[in-house]
Image (tube, rainbow, N blue to C red; front, side, top):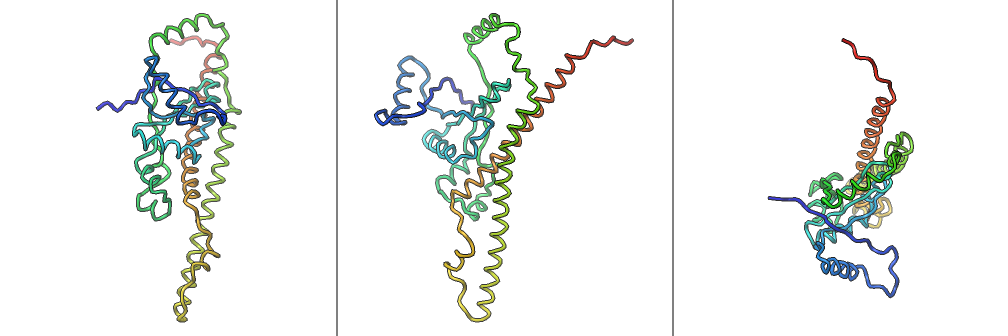
Length: 274
């Protein structure tokens, strides 16, 4: 069974929609109608978004948009394009989709501890990454060859930029923020567990004295309830932290490879020994 999804075209949304303009849904229909009229593939298979340094996985808006697309068209994906890393010579194009378990939880809208445990849900089971393979048509390949012939000799040297500090530093800054958020959530969970133990001890003491257990109002004064979106945000933050770790590892590996290549080019040829 062929499980490939071919993405052949795309169109952008206006940055700012005026009041007199058509809404986003109608805008999509109009654009797809135009594509069909010129014999271009017009089947809707998802959406794309600019994603500098992989910063969009932790956004609730990303989950809502992808859930809407997958609920309507099961094969839908979201393509993330990182223009910053691409400008440095690292083509960054990733495809994601929500897992079946994530779709189920989004439909129910319940992200309590019990629900997550029952479904064996963890941060690495929320999104699944789809491998991306870029294929150009023969016409595009011919055009690229012509462009290469007309390029100046020093054109493209920016792709050999070492980026030893700037790229890795800009990648690590958001990672540190995510780790701080993870630490805050971990501390909250620890305090939550301690307060639950405190409530259990107090109820046991009251039962021994023949008194009724603590009321819901008294419990709410001790433990602040967690909203479902807050737990979802925490789950997505774990996803984002893993994404930043993988990105930092990739940047570091590519920079090390560039350093070795630059060292090899700068060293004079050594005489061969018999």
